Amino acid sequence: MCKQEVDAWFAEYDSPQKTLMQAVRAVMLGADARLGETIKWKTPTFVCNGNLASFNPRSKKHVSLLVHNGARIPGQFPSLEGTGEEARTMKVHDAADLAGKQVELEGLVRAWCDWKSPVLR
Image 1 (cartoon, rainbow, N blue to C red):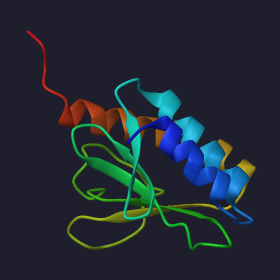
Image 2 (image 1 turned 120 degrees about the vertical axis):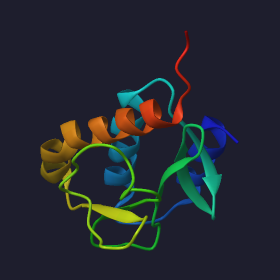
Image 3 (image 1 turned 135 degrees about the vertical axis):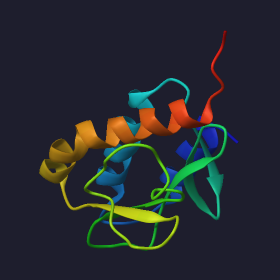
Image 4 (image 1 turned 90 degrees about the horizontal axis):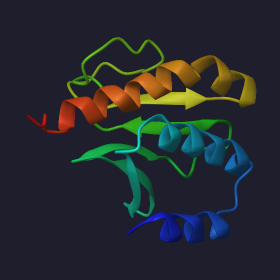
């Protein structure tokens, strides 16, 4: 699956958070060229040698991003919420909140891609 399938998913998606979700998508995809996207679990999922994060399409009050192995990604990402051994969530409430979290979100994407990509020698 690829960009066209994710675009098709968004064309059918009806939510008050659609525009904000698309903005989060743009930030994530712009953070690292190694990051791709697909549809998994009936929602857009960001991938780079494994599943980084998926949107929760049912969230109506904010954009909710499930970071599948958020507890294990190297680095400090204070906007990630949760206490489990693996998954974390990041909530984005509006465009101003996204602007405030953009650098962190970009760093999260790069940390994941660096962690999951083999080093070329």
